[in-house]
Length: 153
Image (cartoon, rainbow, N blue to C red):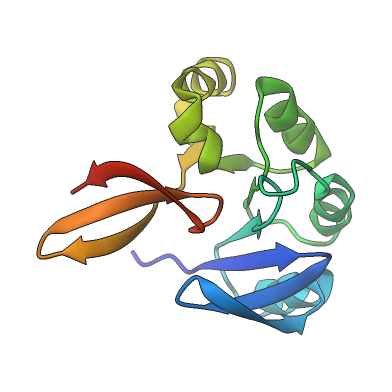
């Protein structure tokens, strides 16, 4: 069975679309687009604040709370999750799952702690990678802006 999962990248309360992890253009309002995807029959939605780690912030709590009152499909949320308490606050706002990118690389204990307390089905590790050559890929953090020199296959 196929599942359709929509991913919305959010910057400054706008959904944006990147071009090869560079250059952004504004697409629209997150609430409006989530409702449209829901009405179109998607199975799940991922909301990702693409500059949360860069600016050391989390600001999707209110948005998640509003969205979860209007739709009834799973919502995964990420961006700026630096601690168990950040994850807990998003889940209490209505998110069903959390996604971790930067701090999955810089704080591996965060993955373990969240998985143990929320269940592994609730924690998504979001890997951003760029192909370096042949079959060599490099892991990036900060939503694809910062190389780590870590290889992935």
